[in-house]
Length: 194
Ligand code: FES
Image (cartoon, rainbow, N blue to C red; front, side, top):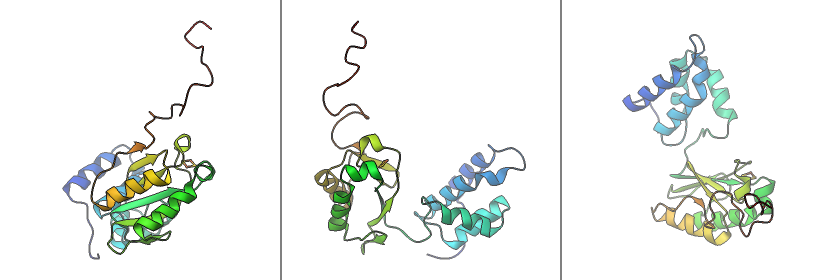
């Protein structure tokens, strides 16, 4: 995709709301949320025209906006698949089996890390801690977290996405939040007068 970029009415209204949150003269502080809006409108990645548009919108040098877009892993500078799969590889997820999840991702999507599937349905990347370590191993796909994964449950999630279905998000083991996976092992007497 190439050519001019501009926020449509919906995204422009959102951008105006965000920019208005900052004090007069500090509107450039909105660069990250505006890049996020641009990426969402543009289908998951930021082509040069979108970066230039955000720069002009905020009155910033293009290079400053490109620096931000190229620094943060949540911004993509190349096209991505419909499902942007981010495998967490940091220690807690790794200890709990993230290598197995990477193998399943390759098997189901055909993607090596950093690749997009030929049908455009998946892009698979590895990222650092996504802040849900107590539900490790976990994976972020687009805006959703899939947690407490096993190789089998991750395969079910990916196969469902491949078929255009919407799998259940959150813990895949059935536990609520980050409650203990088994019986309580500490603070058992709290509230019981013990
Ligand atoms: S290590 Fe995976 S979410 Fe923190």
